[in-house]
Image 1: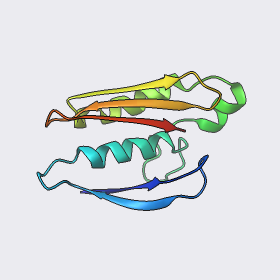
Image 2: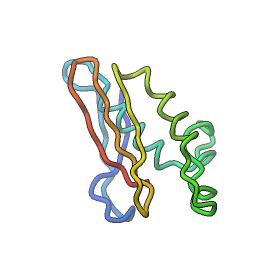
Image 3: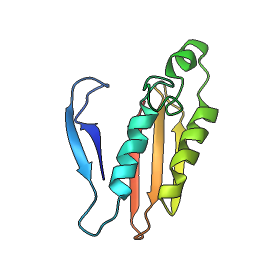
Length: 115
């Protein structure tokens, strides 16, 4: 299994695409975490094949209302791939999410993602 994500972005600009694969022990936790991060950066309906993934970023910016419901839906779509998954918003000028995932192998993966 594989997924793609960007690293070394500055303010959402630039960066390098990297491929994330199943690890040597056969776990896909990093693949699913990368996919979750990409979905939180995806605008709702932006991907024609996966239109139900993402958050309504543009309407959220215009209304200044954080997309809590859609963030919860995205979390619920990925919770089956982890022993425990938490996606929480950070109250800051730019939408940011703190993700904490407990993998099936017992490792804790954490990420802070600006949307």
